[in-house]
Image (cartoon, rainbow, N blue to C red; front, side):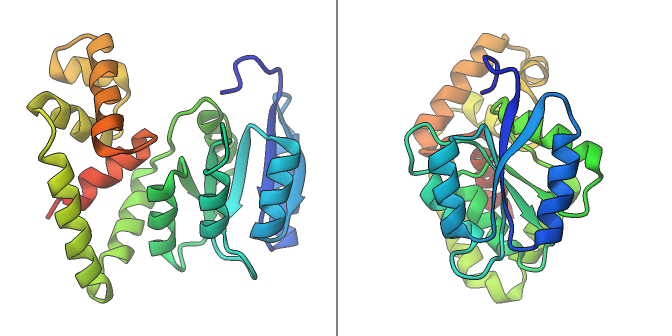
Length: 225
């Protein structure tokens, strides 16, 4: 959360210097955002996150040495870790799924329009997920191809088992979250109060052993045929 800060402090971790420069120009051009540090690999990224305690981490997936998936796992083990927003070119989409399941708060394409990158940074800084329908569809399609069929079946069965422990209302809330709805929209869909939606969501975090809404959405998608 950045509500008590005047400026959202961002760390960029990407092995491509041109990508880092472009992202810095985009982010530093906004009055409420600033890049406080950059790193070219996962190990260095973990180090600068520990040193600078940023509000948001922009993390590349594929890097030499420690990749973005491993670095994200490590960062999210910290006490009060910053939200991680994954950067990808979608040449290895299954890694993105792994990162999201690990707790990354979302992902964006590297060729996303600058205005949407800015919106994404602000959104995750507030603790809200980025679930682009187009990008999610591409990730799911790539990670559920024939080469992933055995792993897919195991993941689907595990997700179905966890969802089976939910009440009907909790399951409806989980499905609404997977549809990308916010609390007011979920309340309207289910004809319940926003406070009740929040209570159901809290139950989902506990029963499904997840940390954020992205993980809930992925579990619902995993359980689907």
